Image (cartoon, rainbow, N blue to C red; front, side):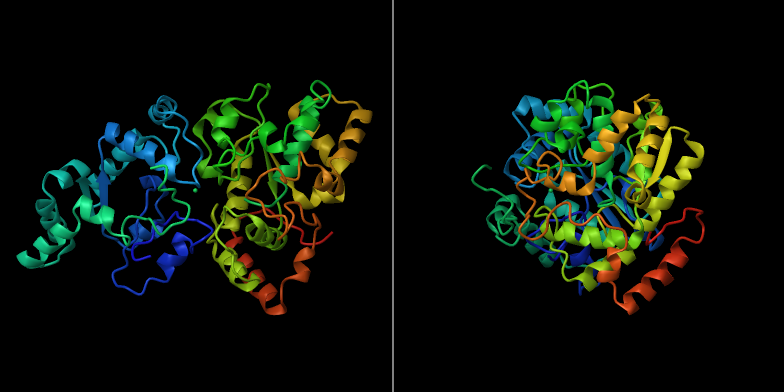
Length: 429
């Protein structure tokens, strides 16, 4: 709470960005594990003082393993050998250790307000490193104060201190030793049927859609992670779902010239759908009331970044990457059969009219909403008592949520944010 973790999104406490925004202190102290290339631009623009702490990879791997074992939000790490192989391959939440430490080291050469520290130095002589910190921060603390601080931050002291040992966070199990509503599930199911509906019909009744078309960023404790599911897919081609903005998509997707289908939804309906999803998803922070959520959405303070940048970023990529099909949710609602035909053409699939009609019928919203293999009801972190995962599937439901003032505010921000892109959306059909 005093030094919020920027990426934190536990359902039981405010998100890291909320805590950071509400810090009353000056200067604000904020913690992040982000690789250097993902740090918010504002950090550099405001010439923020940054302290980076690196730890040798072997000890880092061991510590990370035990953290994943006791953190109920992280996927189960498996045994030590399994975890270590993933660590060495760089298959971790914040990317490869090698890139992380070297990326920040390179940044240090060009950004003078960055202090690069080593965990080993802190262990060896905490007092010396504290003095080093004071010098970097321009703090003139007397010797007695530094000695008192040095004593208080020793490992054993912090381990016993409930205000520093994270024992107050319910998702930490100390007995053992974390875009988004726009039709991607819909298109995932269509693609799965197009490719495998005839050859492997048993998939449709025995495997939930999130196992057939894994969500790359998924890291629920109760099921395998998205990367694990993707790595273990036996089908060819592999179908993988992601909500990542275009700049964060793994390089291998482009290098292998992967076929990519992007589904965009108008911002107003997207916001409404996202709000209800956050209400029922126990893995997300509590969204607050509708107005609170909408303000954050308009400001771009959501997990996958601003909606404006997301849809326009992929639209721009479409101009230079020919293997990208840009679809609109509104078009899918208006004429699903026509859009299935478009998909087949893009994918080079010669499906018969009868097959396409059968698929079109099977992927209608009401059919998918009742289908346990597509409605996400098998995932324990989804609370269907609050809201179903598949709620309405309509175009224009935003009118039942937006006030006149909210609509005017959204339109004003939209006009400003989208002025440099040619992508156009329909908010009703």
